[in-house]
Length: 386
Image (cartoon, rainbow, N blue to C red; front, side, top):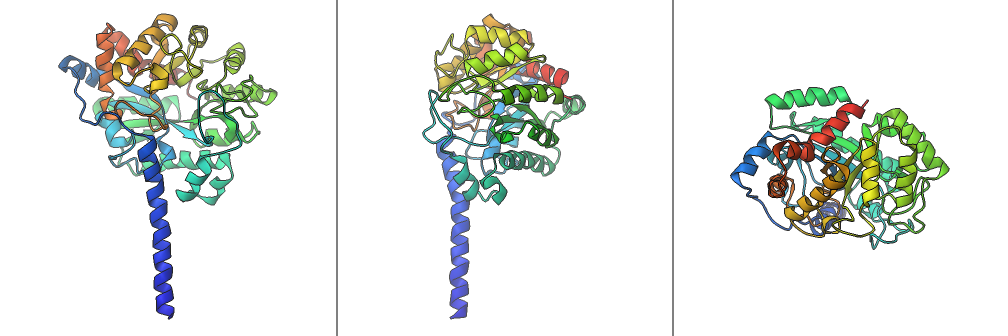
């Protein structure tokens, strides 16, 4: 009898473990599809140019999922081998802490959360089940552990000196990549601006005031009230600037954008967005905000998904980039894919050469393509990181 009970218990444990392993993977398979499978073919001229570029992507949510990013995946849109294959020199890995059910770009409140069940089923530490701060710290630890296990293929960038050393090494060893940590939404502070210090110590160098809902820091473009910075929010922006953390206005309400621009003393970024000039909706930036962010010396990352660019191919991305360049200037535009962020991507990160190809078709020269594809963001990081 005892042996039978032990066997039954073992089967139950194995069953639970199997469910925990399967459900996150199944969820991601449905939420992060790639519309066109590799291999990706560009013109010989674009492929040759792309090999010479330093490519940087300002936004991906890959740390949210349960995959080993050191292994080339058959699902999702980003991992270390595919970054290297796509000649991506730097990927910003952005942390998601809370996401409302029935997500939409118009109006969401904070009463529900899709991340809690994902954390539980994904066997995240119990502290993350109830704390948004702990979710941020856990995901930051994941990136550092991936780097430690990468045999040198992944470097986590924390300082300007780190970036300089990494780029010098990559000049000799092109088959490597780097990651920078960011956060979507300052709700991870749990109302305490002092938490910024813990996040900074964990390597986080970029954070947005709001994500898909209004919080105690700022209003979201997709929130209920869509207000601006709160009193606490103003303190948060000041503290971020003091720590040399980039303020990321992706998902921020128009009022929040105005409030941040009015007080900013350092360059501001928008890690992933579209522009109203080519795709007019609540998610995307107005011409006035494109100009305002450029005036700070910042960089705006153009996304790859349909709501951002009103299309599902590289040409749609390039058209949005061309419009943004016309308003903000070529030195202020970059890439912000939103890979692994519950989007349908036209290609995974191994195929970003298709953007280079599409920019060539739009008439950009090599110097401007190099700036857009990564040079602008890398320059900004070199100037602003601690």
